[in-house]
Length: 186
Length: 186
DNA sequence: ATGTGCATGTAACTGGTTACATGATTCG
DNA sequence: CGAATCATGTAACCAGTTACATGCACAT
Image (cartoon, rainbow over all chains, first blue to last red; front, side, top):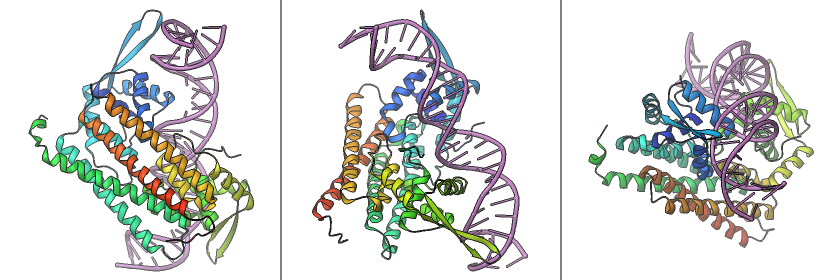
């Protein structure tokens, strides 16, 4: 089975296929747009991953032939695939998770329940808060012997963390206002 | 020789040793503090990397014995090591470079010249600007068929990018005021 | 004709991780 | 007395990239 907390390309794929069936090439194209946030996998990992998902029964494929040309292969997520994805998406996020991992989940969040999404954001918020605190502590502790360049890097980290916090707070308060009744289907 | 643009652990090490000699364990400890920003390598990659740097003559080692116990190995960067590091640090940053790669360089920026640092920040600034533009374009283009969750992720990316831009502008204007010789830290 | 985009794939390699092995020291 | 931390290292494994191979369609 799939190692439950590894945020591999397999989940990328599953998440995208959950939104609509597409080919390997489509997946690549889609991900390229967001590559600076979450990175876009190479074909060398994409196609083998599709194969293995197929082998595990998490996706199905429809080869739609295009006379003469090699047929396009449209992949569709299966029920099992949905389950596996939901399972992954709902498990607690690992404390060492990067910004990238967080965005990736956010992107695949169509599979979240409303409350699942809220708790995801809360988890992130508390982690960012502790990062922030850690940096601030380092900054105050490091009066002794640190270069101004090190300070620069830490200050940078601090301002990113602050921005993240602000965004999370905004998003959470918006979600709190939205009454969850529309999304109660589950 | 070392592949010039790969931001491997080797440069982490070189950069830290450029600031002061330390052992493998010290390096690990130091990096752990900033792990959420740049990640901290495992011993399984750290020690072999030190070996290979030693083999390449980029670092020297002083085994300081501690009677009975296995001796601590304090690594020092060599002149060649300095050169290699400077070379890496001064080459243009790869457009697909992540936030992580950027912070890493910033952290190792004690090896930058003043102008080098400024140009580094400028490069980053223009890249972030294009990221921002790309996201905004996607958001406007995607009115058609996108889930609100996808919008959430994009909005998140946008606010991070905005914060980065703001920080970069601030840092750049500060550096512009500082005359290169007066390093008067605030 | 020539290159760029569509479309799929394989093989070799690499840069890491995880788990293991060892052993002394310090802290609760 | 046992657990955590200091401190070094190896070996097996793995997820990914790069480079390669193929071939059609469309625009310059």
